[in-house]
Length: 351
Image (cartoon, rainbow, N blue to C red; front, top):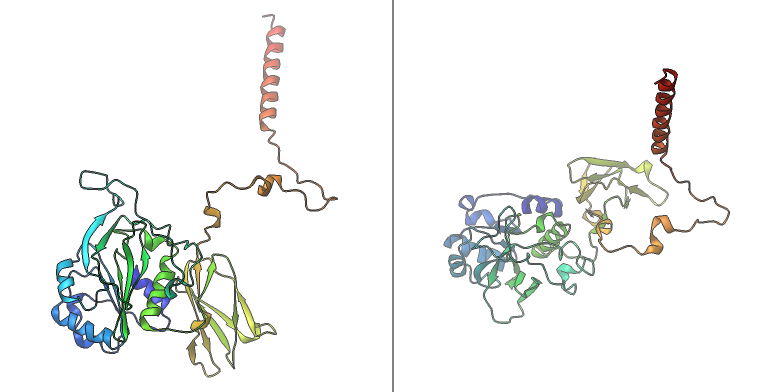
């Protein structure tokens, strides 16, 4: 789930997936972001290489899981971990399992209300829709750490336990997620807030700055794309891999086109093609399409807003016609005719 999300959130970036045994300290050269996902234990050489990598300005993202050896991690990665790893905590029965003696049968853990004052969460809605609705069936507790200006808790569970913590190490940053990035411990990866969360985490870890934020649309909403300079085409790469193309002659007087094919959830990347065929990424025009959750709101609709009670728009307009089902009446009439015919037939026969 996370590698796919990373491919979508970092335009023009190359994402490589490797097993831990296939990664050498030398291979970190030229890399801007490293993600360790449910890694059992980093080797001593890799731990030293990661310290140098982050201190020099690299970004490191860590998520845990069943394979993580907390004792080894705390010994070898003490300089990088925002907080020491503790014991796994099962908040509720995992998906597909039945509650038993060793499974806590309480409701799944949720995230506490988000703090949008943190730069990573500034682009999220006020109430954090897409994040606070996620269920966390299991997560790893983090041991207490001394207060430090280099460390901050970005997300917490409702219990108060840290969910996402970051730490400044030298010129770089480390982020620690205390659960999995797949669906083994949580359903966060299928929530609408997952992709924006990965996007913002990756941007912060690689040091992407700027005032422009990636636009977030609901499925079905349109997006205005603008031509600049002497660009001849704009191309939109959709989450399913297809490409939508708009040529300059299709643009309006304002040198813009309207893109409305936002039926797929995910990140849409925009790139421009110049007169000589040169392709240039346009990350400032990229946008994310999320699920429209308004129709999923279980709150009772105000009677005045119900479609069957809305007043007619204009006084002279005729009220809408209602369809009336007549087949019940016709069927009863047909049965009655058949009975009458049977009675008349019996009388004629003298019965």
